[in-house]
Every structure is written in C-alpha cells, then in structure tokens.
Amino acid sequence: MSYGRGTKTIRDDRNLIRYLMRHRHTTPLEMCEIKLHVRVPMDCQDLAREVYDERLEFGVAREQASAIGTYTEAYWKIDLHNLFHFLRLRMDSHAQAEIGAYANVIGNEIVAKWVPFAWEAFEDYRLEAMHLTRMEVCIFGVMNVTDNKNAVIGLADSFGWMEKQENGSIKVNRERQECEAKLNKLGLKAPWKE
Image (cartoon, rainbow, N blue to C red; front, side):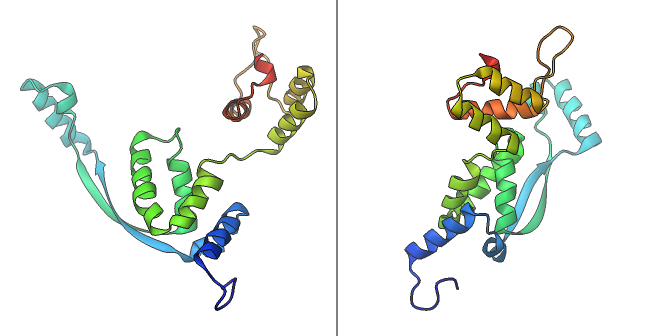
C-alpha cells in the first residue's frame, strides 16, 4: 500500500519492513496473524508423586522416575507484533529453559520461514539489539567525552546506582548491573568496576 500499484518489488518490501521495524511502526505487523497448535508437558500434582515414589521402590533411577507428566494442548492465535514481543522475552538467555526451547522453535522454525523479511528485521532491530535507558545514554555519553572515571561514577551515583552498604561495598543494583552488561556487550568496562 505504501508504494502504490506497479512500483512494488521484493527489495522494496524488505526495505519497508526494515524501516517499519527500526522505527517501531507496528501497525502492519498487527495485520499479520498466525494460529499455532501448541502441545506442552504439564505435571500431574498428587498422582505424579505417587507414580514417582512407586518407581523408586521398584529401583528405577530418580532421573527416569521423574519423567512423569501429561501434555496439554491449546490453539494460540496471535498477531505478528505481539508474537515478536513474546519471542523477544522468551528467547532471551534469562528466560526459563522450557519456554525458551518452545520460543526458539516457534521463532526459528515457523516465523522465520513464514515472514523471512520481518524475521530478519526482528533479529537485527529487536532480538540482537539493545535498548538504552535515559540514564544509560547519559553514562555512555559522559564516558565518550571524558576519561574522568569519577565524573561517570558521580553520574551513576546521582541515579542511585552507587549506594553503599555498611561495610563500604556497593549495594546490588539491578539497573547498574543491566548497564554493566550492555557496556560489557560493547567491549567496554564500567568505570566503577576498575
């Protein structure tokens, strides 16, 4: 629709999709929908425990005895924008292993083949990209213009990232740790860690 009749090519499609993803224009992604038939294992509370204990009594190894469960099935209908949001969360290294395995199959085996240009843009601009908070932009900017690590530490302190414990060590701060991880991904070291 954006190019009009007769001017659209595959290259134009790819470039438009990449532009839309890069600039977070999600309406076209909300027009694409998929319905998945999902089958996942589900534990069976009390009965599973009884069967597990019984298997142990018969000498079955613990790891084999614990392989008890049933499957639950559901149809899942979702638009591409929200599916990408789900996949970004669940393909992350911090996601639980089980849902991460499902997300990787859905993403790499289904979505990548269904909408290859959108999948490529998703990988480039969402999945493998990083988002910077306002505070991180400030930290990165100050690091870029000065070698004075105390200026950067002072800025981090103004964000509440450098609060000390009674023993003098720096308290755990999730925002600071996330900033450190982003710096590390870029091959940079946080000045407060030097």
